Image (cartoon, rainbow, N blue to C red; front, side, top):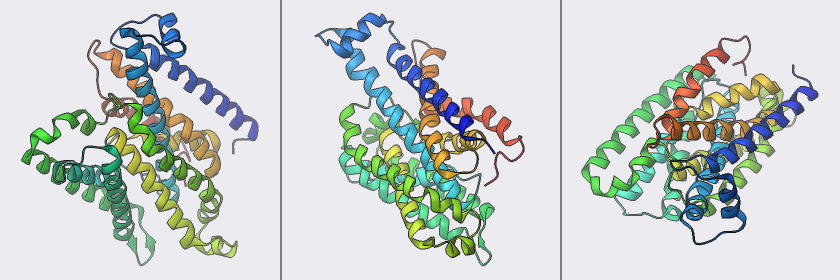
Length: 332
C-alpha cells in the first residue's frame, strides 16, 4: 500500500502538472499569441482582438475544462465506490446519456436554451437513470456488477437513440448544439459556469463526507453497519453527489466519456484504496486528462480542432488497458 510520502509527492506532481496545463490551455490556440500579450490580456486588458481571444475564449474554455474534469473524475470514483464495480462510469452506466437526453428534450421540445433552465433537466435525467440502473442491477444476492453494466449500456443506448431521433425531428433547434453533442468545452462563456458552480461545489463536499463511510462499506454492508455507518443515508448522499456531478458536467460540456472510468483507476494505483485520497487525486487528474486532450485536439488538425470528447477516448484507451493489466489496479 502506498505510504503518505508517496501520496503527497504524487499530489505535488499532479498540482504542478495541472498548473502547467492551465497555462498551456491559455497559450495554445489556432492563432499564435505571445506570452507577453497573454499576460497583458489577463492583468491589463485592453480593446484588442488578441485580448478578446484570451479573455472571452481561451480563459473560459480553460475554466470549463477544469470544472468539468473535476466533476467527471470524482463522479467516476464515486460510482465505482458506490457500486463496488471497477467498470462503473457515468458514461458506461448510461448516466451521462440520461442527462444528455433530458437536455435534448428541454431544448428540442420545450425550447429552453438557457443553461439555468436545462441544467435542471440534466440533473433529473442523471438521477432517474442512476436509480434505474441501481434497481436493474440488484439481485437477490445483492448488486451484480455485470448486470449493472449491461443495464447501463442498454439504457444508455436506448436514450442515445431516442435523443438522435428527437434531434432529427427538429434539426434547426440542434444546429447550435452539434459540438455539445460531441462533448466539447469550446464556446462556453463563464456566464454558463456560474449557475452550475454552486452545485458542483456541494457535490464535491458531499463526496468528502461519504469518503470514510464508503471505505467501511467496501468491507461489506454488515461490517459497515456494525461500525455505525448509516448505509441508506450514505447511499442517498452519494447518489445526490453523483447526480450533481454527472448532470452538471453534461449540461456544461455535453456527454464526455472515458474520463470517469480511467482516472479513478490511476488514482487508485497511486494512492491505494482509501476513497479520500482517490477523490483528491481524481479532482486533479481528471482536469489534467481533459485539458491535455483539449490542447492536443487544437494541435492535431491545426488550425481546425477535434472535440475533447473524441480525444479523451484515444488518449485514455491505451492508458487504461495498461493499467488494468497490472495486478490489483482494478480491485475495489
